[in-house]
Length: 324
Image 1 (cartoon, helix red, strand yellow):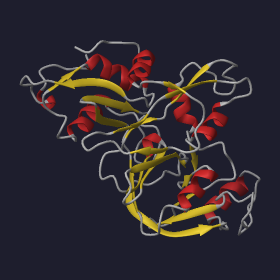
Image 2 (cartoon, helix red, strand yellow):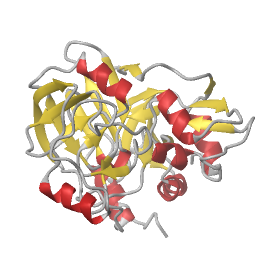
Image 3 (cartoon, helix red, strand yellow):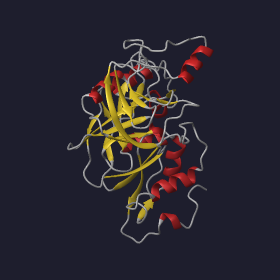
């Protein structure tokens, strides 16, 4: 049986923390065939003036994932010398590693450039309550630098009701909420774009579109061609293999409209695991750790199982309830 450790200690130990400063971009080498984890968790010491919003901007991390990885730390005033976890280790999303993959439950985008053994990953703002982002398989249909914005009637009505009327067209510039660049998606009405506000990336703040830090969307603008596949999924529980061990990464579940969802976590976790044909047999699972990871929802990959050469029953027919 794998040792049971407190959630934070366990995650930090398994992630092989490196004490380093900010990086320019999350460009990560793809793992070998049959492996699923990229990056390393990092830890920095906060300065007095640091906030999670500032640290996220500097390290390609969204606000919500910073909060989830650092329970008990004040996101607006961590305090000088406080160790802050930067959750920059990821289990790659399930499915083909091609084009763009957006995982709503992570508030994160992955880009797999064709012909290169790297992945780029960036935080996203997604649709807020009443304006859910879609689950879809679409593509990039257009790229537009310095876009203007024509607010839909529904958004103009919302702003007018709040005493903040919008013009019929917002010109390009620092006041444009689309930022310096937009990607048009084949799903009508939805975009990937920059923002005139750094706060809100990695949160549910948009009208359904996908917001990025401006430096991130400009970096993508130079790499992503029109026609690129965009697969939008909603996977709060990701399983992956690294070094012959099985890991689980858990996020707060969202419903199909991008709103926090009350789900049967037992069923959701088992179903996510059973989707991986290579993981459903011959594993020695530590269900205590699985429970801890799912309860924490901290987005940090943690070791939950090791393969065994002894015959093992399929997880779908386990003779006990691991959640009791």
